[in-house]
Image (tube, rainbow, N blue to C red; front, side, top):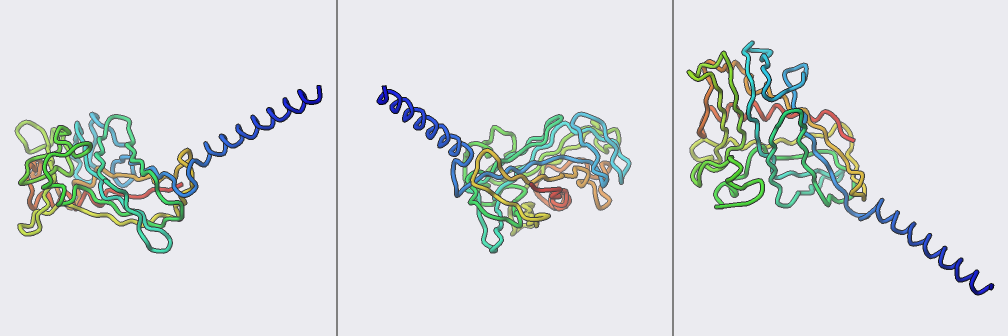
Length: 258
């Protein structure tokens, strides 16, 4: 009788120990790495009003009315700066953000070393090496509709829509921004390095990841006196693409982290 009792007791202890071990493993699957989520919340104007696709909005500076039908852009070469000043770089870091109705697109950075981080760096666009690297896959696949040719490379930002105030005869605006060559002054690649409003702590858990919440002010395209009457179509690398890329670079604000 005692043998059966102690046998059953041992089995219960073993089961409880195994369950507890699995629970701990689930909570902390890797003690040295965690995940970081970047969320891109699109806004409109200095008051950060809600941005909406396929909905007419009025630009707060120009007074022009416009409706976005497409807004796609690349975020690539993401890096995080640790408290000691060293940088962690995400491998194969190319992400295509496609804005749809009622969406806040997200990028997940996996296997980030545990620690405290103070800043982020990222490219808006695609680096020059990948622009001339031939057929590619994933976010860089030509089927995404963000590639011109081996000569002119990727479209870094694609913004399209309609406007009754457009100077185009068909009432549209089309901004296809790209260009990666320094020698002929068509380089529209833009890099942002931004400090966090505090310290971003990455813990050893893939279940509870750190988050960086961006506000992206889409009205920034038309800063500096740009009007749909005079600049409604940009389809090639050059001065206009550089001007609009400079404006869009300033659209990114880190609103909060947690």
